[in-house]
Amino acid sequence: MSNMEHKFLQKPINLYLSAEHDCSYLPDRQANSLFVDPEKQMTAEIYSELIKQGFRRSGSSVYTPYCKKCHDCIPVRLNVRQFILSRSQKRCRSKNKSLEVTAKQASFDEAHYQIYADYVTSRHPGGGMDEPEDDKYLDFLTSPWSHTTFFEFNEHGKPIGVAVTDIVEGGLSAVYTFFDPSPEYQKRSLGVFSILWQIEEAQRRNLKWLYLGYWIKDCGKMSYKDNYQPLEYFYNHSWNSIPPDQL
Image (cartoon, rainbow, N blue to C red; front, side, top):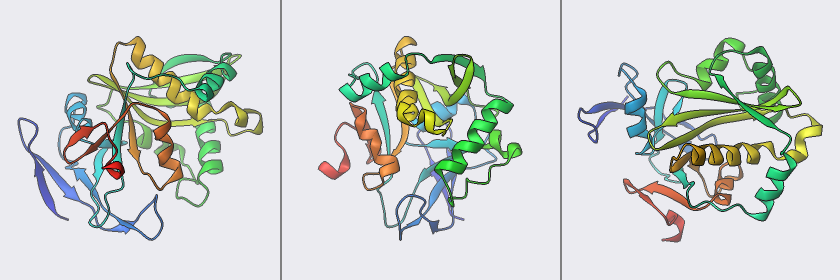
């Protein structure tokens, strides 16, 4: 694989280009990812700098899309200090006012895992995630160096969802959210509630940013992030208030 260096930190970090593979988000596209050297001794402090440069983590792997013919995956972050709830978001918050949120350690919990297994089986059939394994569950959501919290959503003492969140310098990073896919919760918009709650948590901590991962205009699973404003978009090596498709 290719070897590159990134020099925004005091010492260069070796980066490795993945082999080309089918894109997970856009049909008939080929994708590559740029990974931080797995031998690099990663820390939460280094990751805080990397996330400012458009990187994300999956488990302990830190990466950013680096496709040869496509630049549609755009890292985005929300300025929570300027965020204003829309009418639909206010309705979502109201529908879920009975929920209690508890901070939990990022460790294995059987109840959490069962919700996760049901969620990925229901939401991602045929996508490679629909055969979850308990020994790989934490490998996907956590890492030994990140400051990760599982925010558990409870309804009358029963856990019905978890927002996996990293605490980074100046903000929070929404890593992954999973929730009970049962019909009784489908009208609750728990995915929306999760983001709204993380926005409020960042505000409570006097932080500025909620990092939301990648925005992809032509992918419904990723374009919904437009509903949270004001977003900043990372392209041309800097954060911008205008999405690249509007330039």
